[in-house]
Length: 320
Image 1: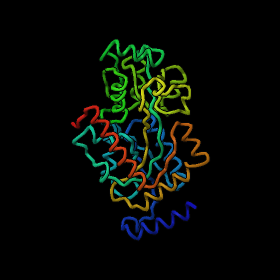
Image 2: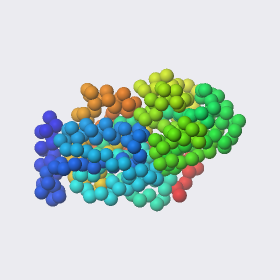
Image 3: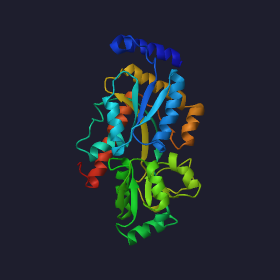
Image 4: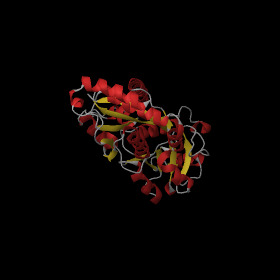
């Protein structure tokens, strides 16, 4: 099935795209830019997706980590790449719908600078803490923060990220005030959580769940039911209503990439992850597979942009 689809799509792409006429895609390795450091949930999800994409396409799909500015550095690198199908990048809830809320000088347009490919899947948010949190459960954590306004330190992976925006929302909903320290990626936060430099992080389970199970971190509450952390209570169970967001991982290419190539990648990933071992592999990481078409993914980004902008307005956040 995938081979027949691949032949028909690439025939159309070759006819419409001179760059492909001399080079039947893919004939060499594909680069996948991950805009965050190794070791976090985004990186882990990208490596699972690119491994199975490589198997489907018959060429290496090589992960290149390009962290910085909450994901903007790597995302800009994707936008500026040649649109020949040999550079794709991981897009996230942060890099596309949320970043424009915080930055006027965003070095790319989240819509017009890219060719949408697909949304890989989504994962919950879990509030984790280290020794500096000094609380055994969510109610005692909130009580401690209220008793020490502005003193408890939380981390984020950047001020242009959904995790930061949602932590601000949590402060509003819970009636608390904390102090913020930004990092370049969650893998860089974990050591500082362990040594007490920061107390809390609103994280995604794929990277940190093992450390929670080992007792190195405390998981206080989670936005949606979790396969990896089934014992962690929902925020709603503590009266924090409407705090049920998920973080998504997707793939995009530079604007001008042949639509047939985007469709081929989407179909290869859908075949790999919507059933069988691939589906089980993502779900075991707390990532619910999605794999919508490029057009459907475009609509997801647009809908999220409206939703998160409305939240930012509620929080009186203005782009800088």
